[in-house]
Image (cartoon, rainbow, N blue to C red; front, side, top):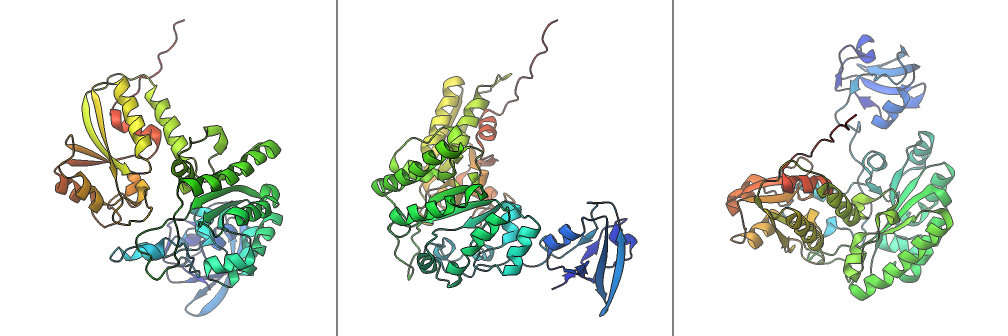
Length: 443
């Protein structure tokens, strides 16, 4: 369907051609325009023929402009249309396990290849058409992030409750042959797609060669809101260790064969199994950091690197900080390192149990203000509470339970400050000081 122009940038090629808000962009050189990706790709050229529709009348406009110069049209959404929603009913879907009463956008399941390219969102491929697959290859929309879960066709249908889940596995081979890099995700469910099935999936994906840039494996999250849903058993220390053995076997084999791990277990496997997190070299370029793969290692190393830098002055301060139970041991270790170097800086770490979601949910990003208030009231050591930005929405204005940082501060009688999630930024926030600039060498 055509793109509806909402506004036109002044002094842009579109403005100079007389395009007005309300007109429709139909095609460029005969290529249909369906969304912003089509628009950006085809308007990058220095010369093309644009077909527009104004007041029901189609006309062709020859366009001359600078190559890659923005054409100047804006649309209702940054995608040019609405987000593509998910057609699956996965047995492990986290959104299906959300408690009632949250804000409506939190219940939307996106499954959009454009968001995969732009923001690293995962797609299952079950709502892709052959045309969209051809477009990804033609425009070289790479890398993309794909939720594979299993390469066993029958098992994939069962896990995703979608008949297309089997047929669309063929797109993996199409992407590989088309030169599209794929970062794959496996959400593992205990006793279902782990064990021998996991080995089969890893063998199949690795057979695609360099087209598979990374394979991240994460355990399925289980909340307390699984009424009428498939019964999932969370991983315990023993079963996490068994799964980790397989993942590391493949990872180290890949390192021997091609010099990189390719297969990356998420941090949760190590923490659940009670094992040490691998060194930074294991994670190569940290391709799936946002999926909790290597996040612990990156935070640890960058925090200590920042702490080792010289400072002008570090004033005494007393800070409370909240985190999830999974990250609490690491945060405490870093807080102790700060106090050891700067005895006047006291950091009290509060591990907040996730009672709001329940189940095995323990990551900091899903901690709510409700749980912070219930578990920290009367227990703070100072008047400043540090909250990691990952607990808040993109605008950093409210928690998942719709409470603002200001309201949290009022409830606890303190000042709430939002601190960076990365190790270096968090360290700077704890210290609140500037780094010493390198002094010029004497001649």
